[in-house]
Image 1: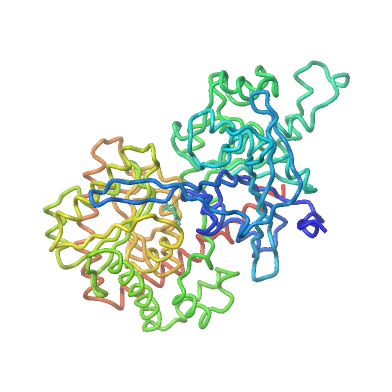
Image 2 (image 1 turned 180 degrees about the vertical axis):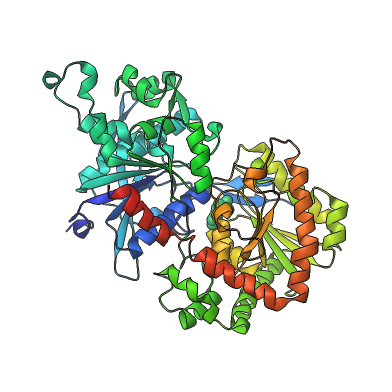
Amino acid sequence: MSILEKHITEPKIAYFSMEIGLRDDIPTYSGGLGVLAGDTIKSAADLILPFVAVTLISRKGYFRQEIDDKGHQIEHPVIWDPSKLLKCPPEKVSVTIEGRKVHIQSWVYFVESPRGKSIPVIYLDSNLPENSPDDRTLTDYLYGGDESYRIKQELILGIGGVRMLRKLGFEIKKYHMNEGHAAFLTLELLHEFKKDIESVWDEEHIWDIESVKDLCVFTTHTPVEAGHDKFSYELFKKVFRDYFPENILKKLAGQKNVNMTFLGFNLSNFVNGVAKKHGEVSQSMFPGYQINAITNGVHSYTWTCDSMKKIFDKYLPGWANEPEIFVRVGAIPDEELWGAHMEAKKGLIDYVNSLSDAAMDYETLTIGFARRATAYKRADLLFSDIKRLEQIGTGKIQIIYAGKAHPKDTVGKQLIEKIFSYREQFKGKIRIAFIQNYNMEIALKLVSGVDIWLNTPLRPLEASGTSGMKATHNGVMNFSVLDGWWIEGHIEGYTGWAIGPAPKEIEPDNNMNKIDADDLYNKLEKTIIPLYYNNRKSWIRVMENAIGKNAYYFNTHRMMRRYVTEAYIR
Ligand SMILES: *Cc1c(COP(=O)(O)O)cnc(C)c1O
């Protein structure tokens, strides 16, 4: 009996994503996009949705981060053995790359929900002896290699993915593209729906665009033009040969380049951004398309630490599968909520002290900042005015950082070096630690063990952000620039605190760093530090609101119900 026998009995929603982060020992993710994909699948399983996911095997992972004492990032491949956790069905498909036949196999991992539902995740793999040595490496490195490597990976994901689903016996009723990397799947679907030349007026009409659009849903994640995947037609031609006529593709994917976002937009009947603001920003970038907004979430059970789980189970039974129950967070006695928080905080502080000479303590207000190290996230904004920070923070705060920079992101790497030099500079005044190799396990320790979660992106570049949502599930409130999801989740002094002006008050101003930093210092000094040390009861109220107002809403159960009603069933 095939391992997928019981999974091919009903039509499915097929969710395509270049990266999927389900657990750290399947290291096929780099950051937010992948973790969101993993959380999406976990919620789909809990909600018993007919779902199947498709991605690449990424045999060398993203990378393991090592940082030397100067703060230089060193990248190591993560070699992992898929056969430990995944099953390899015998079915194979092939795609044509640069005129060569490239064979593809798949690995399947089952995401099991406690409610009994199991969702297959298909990892495509070109490492087969019948392929050339180069082709065998095409599914090795997540976001590695050059343009040509990338377009081949996307060919495998989109075209190979559709073929593999067919071969394994799946019937698909919707294709959901999580970002543009998978958009070549639309071309394969156009081929499947191709009409007989005899039945149409002219050659162009053999391509049944409407039928494909009916099947496709596209989610965009990037609010900047440069962030969208684009390939030259020259490269497309070299890799795809005569797979698809260029004159038609130009109408669908753009005249200048093969723009994967345009391709997805033009062949999807439902397109969305990942927060309300991001929907609006995308709408103004792409006039002429209707862009909806479904705000991201996180998988509540995955992103709640053990000590919080314990009190949620006690006072809010059923919360994990019905996060709306967080509305009753007030049922938890203050001492128990604080106790659960302190348990998580001690765990984190012990962990940090075991890795470094930071010598942190349990009582000091602890600030967490962890995310991709890249320019727009402004990891160094907190250090804009060293004197001021020293004045405000000495003896009052300690700070924990983590985050990887993409191997080619020089500025991101410099940010890590900067944090390391500030760590030295502040020795004896403000304790600063940097935890290496940020991954999901470290993320959970951090978002649950700090007291406040800091986020300082340059507006409007944070499409949504999700780590702050994870924090709220652990009663850790956000102190963040009003961008992405926080515009929707923020009530000043009630769920957390804003940094800088509201998005509609922003004038085009290149002084944003100073404006934001000033506000950050003011609030830290006048509001947050006094509240933490002098008014624990009010502090705990804000923690409670983070759970009851933010975690209540910013979870993937709510998000998936919206995808079902607004995008999948239409
Ligand atoms: C949640 C998560 C992210 C995304 O965090 P953002 O705040 O959205 O940037 C990145 N990396 C890891 C390991 C995560 O768990």
